[in-house]
Length: 196
Image (cartoon, rainbow, N blue to C red; front, side, top):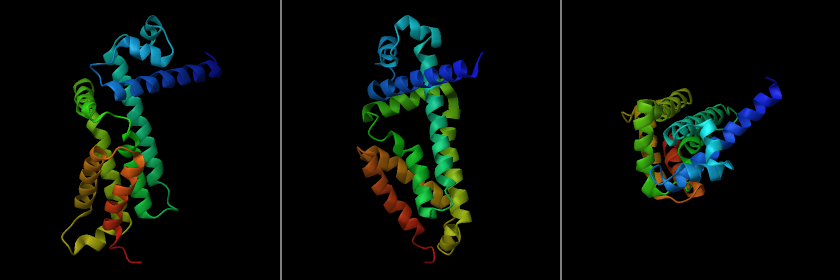
C-alpha cells in the first residue's frame, strides 16, 4: 500500500471519527442512530458499516481519538517553556476540559461519560488522572508548590483543586471563552504566591 493511500485512509478515518463525535456530543449516545452517523460522515449507512460494525464500536473509536487529540494538545500546552507556568497550566486545562465546552448538551454529558466508562472501562478516566499528574509536575517544577508549602498545601492538593474547579466551571459555562476566563482566575490565584 502506498503512503498516499495510507494517508488518505488515515484522513478518512479521522473525518469519520470527528463527524461521529460531533453527532454524539450533540444528541447523546442513545438518541444517535447509525443513519445520523453515516449522514454526518458523508457515507451511506452500508458504507459506514464497512468502517464500523456497530454504533458502540464507532463510539469507542471516536472517544479514543478524541482522548488522544486532547492528550496531544495538553502535552503541547505544557511543553511551551517560553510561557509562564500560569499560561501552561491554563492551556493544559483548556486542552482537556475547555475544548468540549459549548459542544455538549448538558443533558448528555453524564450519559456520554457513563457510556464511555461502560464501553472502555476505567481507561477513559485515565485522561483526567494524566491531566492532574502533569499539572502537579509543573506545579512542583515551577516553584508554585514551594510557595504554598507553608500553608500546608502540597502540589497534589493544588492540582486536584484546580481539576475540581475545572470540572465545575465546564458545567457552568456555555462557551470556551467563558471557561478560559473562569479558569484563568483559579490558576492565577494559585500562581499569585510565586515571587515576582
